[in-house]
Image (cartoon, rainbow, N blue to C red; front, side):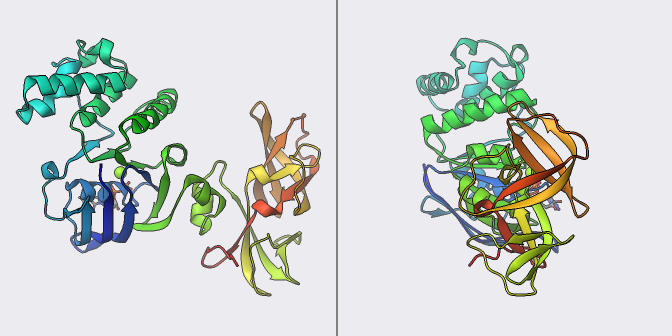
Length: 361
Ligand code: ADP
Ligand code: MG
């Protein structure tokens, strides 16, 4: 186990800088997930930690060692990729032990490490099988097992579940979480899937265009997004963003509806703002959670419904904009039906329209 630290880490390919001075401290045993849209620099960052890419500036340490110039094999890390390749002609046991065999470890040590990894990953009954006789999820567990046998200080995962179907992905997510509870190693995990990030991480690092936008616990980034990018990237469905302007100490939305400034936010008169509300916090009256202290009401027409069982997702319209809302204890809704919605203001957000930054204060 070891902590990992990135100080002003930069990566350029030729003249093109793709990672811009990243700072990140990962505690020993922590599970940190780098998440962001495709191309934002997640894999590059992970590969710099692994030593598979040179860094163009800054410093990376693992434990107490600066590893900038250390080759991958000397960093005591294990990496699991999306496209893990198992050796098809070897059994699970041989696949698991291969890296230790290459390192010329004694057979007794290899066997003990393989048995322990197989136990952790429930692979014991499969040790004599070849990869061709395994399911996708079992193969992925073998790929993780290969990483475990080496007792690395740090596990690095790059989208390890992206090739699996949705159901298997959900199962493997749970397996990875259990794995972390058992091995308690430091994990840096890359994904573009915000649900995966939310469910796995102790802390999430949200990246965009080679920058870190926000770092925090899953709940923290969900409840206190620093800007509209994080607000819409984290959470499903994405947060509704409604443009408006501060007039008379209130938010006058485009189209003329008026909402109070949410508690905890402030903005000067005349400022162009964006009001943020998640579907969970805008519900039709009579089909909502019990009201809290700070509520507002708004009327909208409903254009489409998506019944999900215990709740229904409503697609409503406000001043030409689509707004997604939730309906608890659903009843049938007529298309175009106008409904009064209650908004839980305590859970709403206010952003500067130009910069996108949260107007906390
Ligand atoms: P992510 O993993 O978040 O999808 P990457 O880290 O793979 O993103 O890539 C970040 C950026 O760096 C992208 O714009 C990508 O095109 C660029 N990039 C990655 N590898 C190279 C390379 N070998 N040469 C030039 N540009 C690269
Ligand atoms: Mg990638």
